[in-house]
Amino acid sequence: MKQPVRVAITGAAGQISYSLLFRIASGDMLGKDQPIILQLLEITPALEALKGVAMELDDCAFPLLAGIVQTDDPNVAFKDADYALLVGARPRGPGMERKDLLEANAAIFSVQGKAINDNASRGIKVLVVGNPANTNSLIAQRNAPSINPRQFTAMTRLDHNRAIAQLAAQTNATVNDVKKMTIWGNHSATQYPDISQATVKGAAAEGLVERQWYEGTFIPVVQQRGAAIIKARGASSAASAANAAIDHMRTWALGTEEGDWVSMGVYSDGSYGIEQGLIYSFPVTTKDGDWSIVQGLPISDFSREKMTATEKELAEERDGVKHLLP
Ligand code: NAX
Image (cartoon, rainbow, N blue to C red; front, side, top):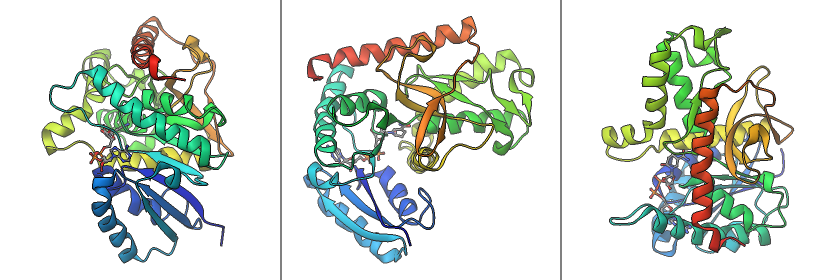
């Protein structure tokens, strides 16, 4: 049996975590041969609820679950952590401006970034799920100067999965038939779901759907899917978000399939002209626990316009919290 790895999860008593923790503990994220110690962080008032979740984890008698830490101290939660899933965030309250939301989250993610810097394994892989995910990831990264910025990522895998499902349904195919989907930019309504490189059963997706459907239905449906779920379910996406977080980490740790890629919010190195240092979603492949941005894809004028719009929003979010960045 392998040595256990330490997986830190914030917002561990929240609704996404209620779908996430049990699947991680059962081996869905890192494989059925990888024991796991869960290091669960919550705010103090939620520790009692967290205790209930931990009791349920115990009651599953998961063979791979080698320990559970419950804490309201980020320094304890991130101690020697190999993986971190930052799910907890401040939701937008009544009357709260976008600026207030950014600032409230900047406070949380700067503390967590510092705690990761001071306590985590040097090889830690960090995924930020809590919104605004890309900018929260940037804030954590900037507060962790001794960790390679490539180790901080943001989740756009849910958008990626949503886009695959929509395209498969429209082309009477299955999700297994769809390859090379791309989400560019921010996990927000400005994201750009791009099918220009996607294939369905090996055929170019653009040749299988009407342009009107692509621009007028597909793109807005994927961009607004989160809001549609809230309207239908009366609560935001939880099980699908947890599933995407597991997909993101599994792909990062265990690699992409030959001939395909995934979308991940990653530290921009200036690829495709996107400002260096932003956490921007690109098409990436992964191998040996590391990711690379897929290079050399043709970018149409239509794509460029959309990629720039979402880049601009990310730069504005960053500028909104600039005074809080080290
Ligand atoms: P919940 O409100 O159910 O749970 C959040 C939990 O985080 C709460 O238990 C809260 O006590 C805890 N928390 C708050 N501040 C904390 C802190 N400083 N340290 C530790 N824990 C803290 O929200 P849930 O539905 O689980 O969603 C979590 C986040 O995911 C939200 O920000 C949400 O917007 C975001 N999402 C991101 C998605 C993505 O694709 N990137 C999709 C799903 C989801 O909307």
